[in-house]
Image (tube, rainbow, N blue to C red):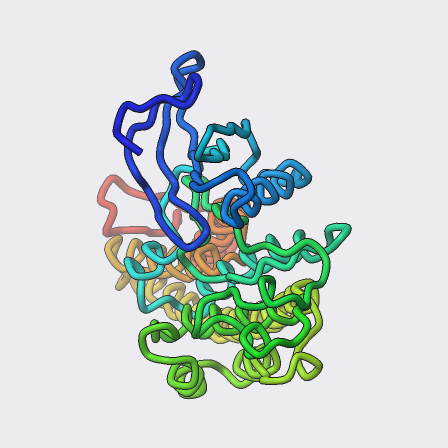
Length: 362
């Protein structure tokens, strides 16, 4: 398709993708002045490619979730079928991961939760939608951080067992049954989700480096519970895997919750130990003030250390911002009050213009 060619009101700008399911171009709606993606299939009207593209358009039209591109139009010509759909801006998950490797385990978990939730939506559709080609190139990370699908060409509505339905998927991610003539179910997508999670954690590309090498690298990096989930997802036999993406989602959420509890326990332990330390420092500060040996610099340094302690809780996600600020102010106020009370005894106090000096009124 030549640049600036037109399909109705859609002007072709450039090719943006090409694969076994067709060629995709970026096009502009010349009336509405918005971009769309146009996928072409060529041949006579009854060719397999054109029939497959029409079926894909029907699938898109039946899905309402915004994480799946919506169908704009379907155009037919003498020797082509064109599926016009929403153009999703952002970077592919593949590029996103390559630009950020190595991912922290918590970052990989958060990203995997978003991907899995999208596939769970497809699996819970009626009839269930089996995507069959889960891999980083088929997802877009949008500007708001959401995960979007960009290709439904291999998706299977319901369960399939014909040769045309089976021989689909990307080696490295695809489940063994996708290439051996067995029935395809949601377990095939579960397998690919497990491989994708292993790739996120290791950076070991299962297509280039092989599935087993990716899983072996994951065994050396992932924590025990995460690796157990990945092995459960990537078992060779479908009946040995989790049965659908919602079950994978439940396991991922369980891992996330347990990590949160562990971090909270560690944070409480850190807070308690710091409280003991700062209690001792407060006692020493009071004694120093009574002896006239504590400077304004030392008071400022102590306040800065308390701030860093609270900042640790805020960055860990255990304190909302307003709670973070108010808690810090309250703690600092109590510390200053106790220091002044300890220094002044029952008498009042006066702070001189020399900030290095704090003394009690006689």
